[in-house]
Length: 360
Ligand code: PMP
Image (cartoon, rainbow, N blue to C red):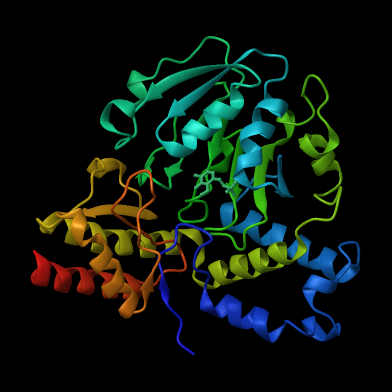
């Protein structure tokens, strides 16, 4: 068996240890005689799996007791809608930071529910930086302030947490959650689709402060109401059980790695390896402002786009896949989430150097 080095933006590479454990437990989970996929979500086995997953996530992120952790479906995209539905609480305006394709989608959905005030935009420079907070124009009466911690397509990451004062701070953390420690208490709500640093697609995690739950006006349909999901421990309906199980294994793996402070050091080292190489090269280019470069998604272009196909072909021949950039920006993108090893990034850098020598 040969496993590829997978640079996909998501669904993304998972730790091999986790996949092996899942394989070992596939037919018979802990002597239960069944796969986790076959278990009732109301049975004691699965309840135990879900409780352990939540407890491990709480420990990893040091989530304060006054926050609920919800395991939902509908991807991060459904949160573009659930956030305004639940958090507007009768107010007519919400503040959004416009930093790229994902912020754009969040803004578009919110507009169906409220007046969106774009406090800052990086559109003037093709979304290649995170606007400094000193330039933001907040509204007087916003229900919340929303930002995208890491723009998966543009490769722009906030290396700081915005100060939203008394306004609840809402963050789309889909593509950098669990890549570094965060102070959850600075946020009103954090949401993240699972398919990058958490586990399989089909699961979305929402971490929400107690006092923001149950304020929706009018009362939303049950499946769109945080209150209903919180009251039912995320089991109002059948949750994505297998995705929650794998997420739980990923959380245990992260704990074995030394937790988020340790994984952050590894992520810094991987990103540095790649960016240092890009900066030293005259053949490859990354367009993002240095201070705002993502540690998770590294877009880059070749000097001559006509060589893109050759580059991808050579990468594939060396076992590296999913390096093609997003269709909206072109070029290449290497996504280097938690499960990507330093050796994997080194293999990419070695190949890039070789390709430059032969084509530069
Ligand atoms: N936000 C960000 C930052 C993302 O990267 C993605 C998916 N790549 C989404 C939202 C949408 O997630 P989903 O496809 O799970 O709805």
